[in-house]
Amino acid sequence: MKRTTIPFGPQHPVLPEPIVLDLILEDEKVIDAIPTIGYIHRGLEMMVERVEYTEMGFVVERICGICSFMHGMGYCVSLESIMNVEVPERARWLRLIWAEISRVQSHLLWLGLGADAFGFENLFMHCWRMREEILDIFEQTTGGRIIHSVNRIGGVKRDISDTELAAILARLQQLGAEFKETARVFGTDPSIRHRLSGVGVLSMEDARAVDAVGPMARASGIAMDTRLSGTFMYDHIDFQPIVETAGDCLARVLVRLREVDQSIDIIRQAIDRMPKGEGMPLENKPRGNPTGEVFTRLEQPRGEVLYYVKANGTKNLERFRARTPTFANIPAMIKLVKGSDLADVPQIILTIDPCISCTER
Amino acid sequence: MDGDAFLARVRDYHEAGWRLAIINVTTIVAAAAPTHAAHGAAAALSTAALPAAAPAADTAPAAGPAPAAAPAPAAARAAEAPNVFEIAWGFVKDGTLETIREQIVAGDAVPSVSEFFGAAFLYENEIRELFGINVEGIGVDLRGQLYKTATKVPFSHAAIKDRLAKNAAAAAVKRS
Image (cartoon, rainbow over all chains, first blue to last red; front, side):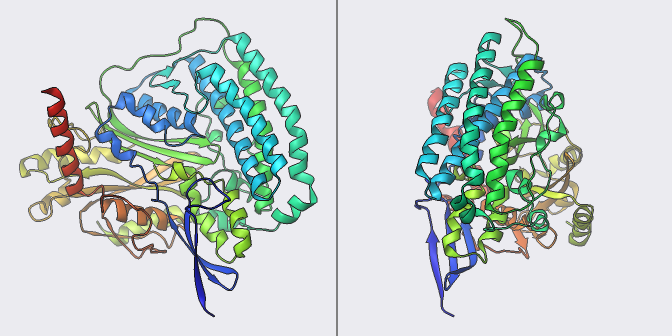
């Protein structure tokens, strides 16, 4: 049969980000997909040659506008472990709270995009209305809606007062109650089920074989979550990774729906357990230049992110590398796209929650 | 590097249920002068443990990948092919990360680990395109299509030297 090559992206209605895939088709079946992840490559890892390590954190935060807080956190945590800086306890709790708020934000954003992709525009509006409230919380606590720049090597720049924390929690719980109605639509609407269930099935064996991470792996029945390793105060939190077993597009939606509730619960536990009071220390400033190297792993909304930092005693780092979750999930995406119908490709690509700006560091 | 011994170690990780988390070039070592070789061999060995001290800082004012010295096997060949890369294969299981590290002289072949880990092809295409490392037997060969960069091989030794010289010149202009 004659083969056709169809370029998917860089401009495609399903995703505002420039993902580039060359799909090779036989009739309507995709038989191969060739990814290009350098369409908007920015060379941020190269910038360590010019930008000093103290300022690099702000560059790293700009890798992505959705996980920006956790990118900044990952960079600062890496430098702290190289430079043996002890972060004050309240700062560590605040980081956890902001990280979980950004997870809620990211999932709501993605659920909206997902709804838009299968034609539920009203659902999209509802998700993004709720996300807007999360952005308001970020603006109120960090001063920035998307780029927060609140992380510093050795701690955080701003405190959130206890009364403010209580108000945020009340607002989030109110949001969680409202979200139940939206989640019900995602979970039970027959046309959504018809569109998503059984599409793009990634079995548990396949998920292991292609080293999938994050919600992608959890939707295929692998209880994998970097937060389980108990670093960054997660050892003080009771939670279990959210796992679905079907491995299809619907399972990936359901995992993220339940993770919104889970994150709000984690924030509640954190606010409950963190030390209270005004004027607590938030930052221990590092001294001198860093020497050493470290791998740091965090659980971002899209899955495990890995940073490699190597410093040689000068004010510029020797190597900086970020392996983002989307990059790790590209082999899984290609695996799913191969053998699917052309009409299902947008759905499959969207449910891995690709963040192209993360991938094109 | 010893390809067979390396692949045997990778197979052990695969069979014990580890997940490939990253293939990362950790050190880009440019042409070491022979006098530095002995010092460099000792320093490079210490990077095997995590976290560990990096090779001693050089005195060059320009920052970025430091021209630290080459390890022992590479140093022996330093005369004809002095540029060295250190590559780390990172594996994760139950919250721990372990690495296999190998040092190669630029241009040497590195065996692919695609047969054990399905995600390896992406990292291998990446290090080939960005660093110019010659990976043999990649599972899915993307033939240089993965990245579209202005510099053909942005992290090759020549490209880095070029950039560092430009950065230093720009800094000198700024100072004056």
